[in-house]
Length: 176
Image (cartoon, rainbow, N blue to C red; front, side):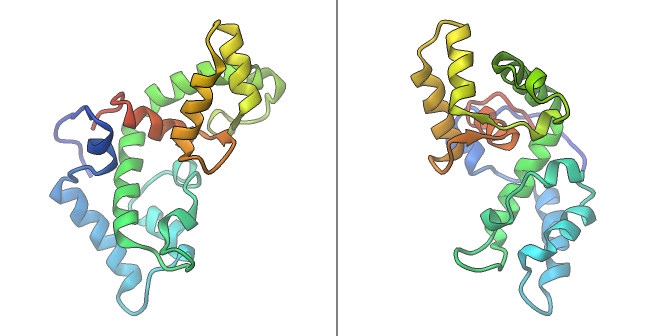
């Protein structure tokens, strides 16, 4: 999967519903077909699927398998898989940008010194961590709480590297 041109996403909807280049969609469909010819692809197949597409485990392990499945089942939803795989490609191409900005947040709340054994992408930031950051830069903590709610779609009271990557994509900071 090679990158032919860069594209900045200028709106939330452009990022959330991207126009996937045909050659990338073909690669994704080909890998999906290998797991769905004889039976439905399941969450259990995801690690091998990502491996077949030569996607780094350090990135794909951050994907929650249930987020790719048809609700209430372990069967993978192709549309969700297609979008998520494409977003992972965007995150891979923008990893340095995401890591740099995530590191600022991790350092800003002190988690890097509090938990030095945790790798950068495995840190999670709680509401308390975001409030520490807000206090240190003299900003109303409510905005950072709103950021967390937007990043996690209100599902969790903490934010992960992957949530933050999606947030940067929604804000138009990532290119492909």
